[in-house]
Image (tube, one colour):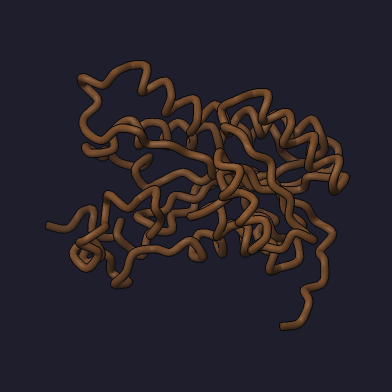
Length: 252
């Protein structure tokens, strides 16, 4: 395997010790970026750093909604690499399934703190640390659940709708220095989404025109595009990456 030439660019990817975040980090490393990844589990984070390449990747353990962790993560990436061109807000949570009518409001607060406020916090910090004066791009990992009602993951869907709106707001405020976009995946095969397909993958994938569920590299490729010069005139948008499942929304 030949060495990949460094791009000179640096990315911070939250919630990246596994799943979609890891797939994003892997795509950015593959094109030559240096990357800082975050995650709650220190052991899992260390393992991910080793797999991605400790010569080009660092990890910062902590909870995404913790403002102190946000500050440390941005400080660490600036100390290690001297810049932070790209931010990918992937960290998310969904601790409850079911309708929203009787949901414990403390649970709802946790969902919004992690899925929305952490993204805002990281965006504010990377903006002030580097991007305001030097430019860059931000990608928020949303969900198709944020585009239409989702009865089994109601609070998660509402939080992702808020994240999509936050994306547009930041794109307006941070222009022209920084482009801000979102990716809205359908079901991607990760531990996080296992309850939606485990033991019934063929059934779960039956409604997807492309005939399969997503994998982390599908989202990694989209994030690579949205943080590249190929998307230099794209901002404030939500890219749906769903295997075509939304095409069936009005069928039947």
